Length: 122
Length: 167
Image 1 (spheres, one colour):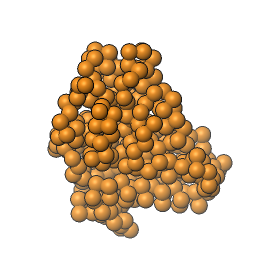
Image 2 (cartoon, chains in turn red, cyan; image 1 turned 180 degrees about the vertical axis):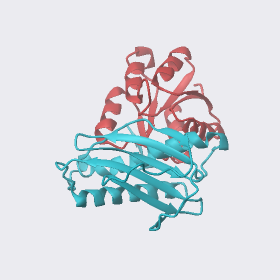
Image 3 (spheres, one colour; image 1 turned 60 degrees about the horizontal axis):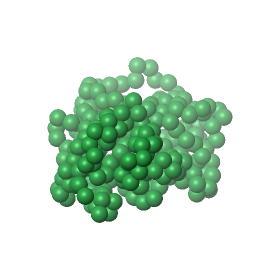
Image 4 (cartoon, chains in turn yellow, orange; image 1 turned 90 degrees about the horizontal axis):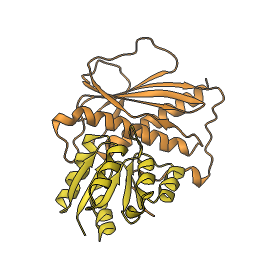
């Protein structure tokens, strides 16, 4: 399996933090700054092995992006983990029902994030 | 506006800020004086609910050091910090059955920001830290209909910051 991870977040700083943590663990990373770009990146690159995705973003939020990705059957098995400030149970349920595989509340711990990605891409 | 509600919301915001900066290993100390600070970066973020609307402005002297942060991204970082501050505040309010909708943040640079006019729905928290001053400007319009009582319903409680859930 590829070790390429897509990071979708409207904060360049968060993308940088997540990217650094994953690169230090041996992953390759690519970035998108909203759900629209994230969806385009997934469609354009079949080698993406997993997605780390924010929830609140301009243009297309993370939950809508998950729904749009999962609506395309070929991405049914693509693991997506939400990384967000949101801890609202109803949103977490929405993400699970949309097909996301995990939910992490910011600020994240690098070790925890890497372990989650390793588990989902093993 | 209920004075008790205003006090509780201010307290929840204060706790959120102390916890957030603590997560980045910056210990904040609430200051009672309102002496001039040297903040240069400000993150603004708004929120809304049928009974509670407003915005927070988070002003800092310099961003707390975090993994991979470069000086060039300091303005983006203060925007993200305001987002994480409001996220914590929102998550605390869930226990009271209040759900806020959040805007996306914006970041700006500027010195000596202040309220144009002081209104009763304006509040300011001044903190000192080893990383410089941190100031939160809270603009909160609170409906008289808002009831802030702990619901005791676990379904309303947010998961904690830093937690990981697998589905």
